[in-house]
Length: 418
Ligand code: AMP
Ligand code: GLY
Image (cartoon, rainbow, N blue to C red):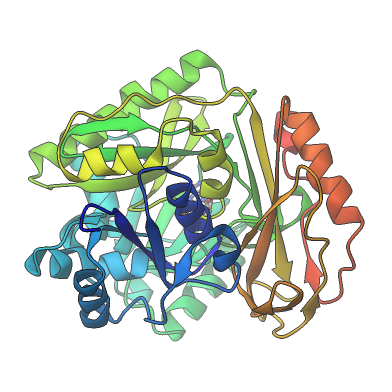
């Protein structure tokens, strides 16, 4: 019994659904717990635990009492709040960066300083606490210009202002809403990619690459969201451009972590834009992405359990094997997301459609009487021998379902020509 491997995942969204499901698939693993988890998880053998993500003391107690081998942290908030430091202080193993390294996501300014210090290409930027000073310099990068809240904003704290008036209005609104510091950033144009790496103290492995869709509506219109759909692999990304991302972005990032004395054991998500001058980083996230995780993990043939276990213990990391299949997913979101999502609408879905998987996120009730709980409700996923095949499976399924109180984007994958 004591040799049983029990794991704990922290979080409750679609990303944590995909992580917990993947860990549970491993023959080495007996129990996968997820705190607090969501109502879909028991359907894939994951045991949900009614403890909130921020209740570190109860999570530690649970991990000790259930002989948890290690804990995998999904969301950024608890990393920024120091969950890793607290688990370590209790003598427990955990996968994720400590509070210091988590500032790479928790503060845009911290991340930009890190990139400048270690030669990681990024956008030009300035950062201000003072509204008047910022407004006096608002035109310096021309238009469009990117305006970012400094702290965590779930992907929603970024506005791309098309002209002076919109920039001024946005800045005033952000300061009025209580933001202490605002970053003004040069607008980068080019395709955007999400690169995920697993880091073990200076060693790393690259997971399959994906593309997210941040805007709420078709044709990249509407407000920024946490992400409305994703796919992997990316046929439009050449081998040489991918290699440039590794040489020019990943390598200096890893060197910076080592030279800066970070003891990083966790996932790092690098959001980048491939500009005509090469790849440039627009953000670091100190965790896996949502919804990219849901499409990349099905393509990972290396056992996630083995990879994370080695990373936590500083053992040599296994090679990454990617399946040749394509993976494609579309988020079903609540009407009104991201500004004012509806709650409680009934979500009626055929549950056993061949070739379709559902990664549940913000839902309540039971799988046969499912209700929305706000925001991104779930993701419809398929694999295929080509991206087109996976795409068609997902959209054919979505066309058949009633959509009261929900919406989704119809153009996921368009940039890959599907
Ligand atoms: P972030 O929260 O920093 O990832 O920003 C959210 C989204 O805004 C990104 O996924 C991009 O689509 C866009 N964005 C952020 N920074 C820039 C930039 N400097 N240039 C162009 N687009 C950007
Ligand atoms: N997909 C964007 C994020 O996880 O922040």
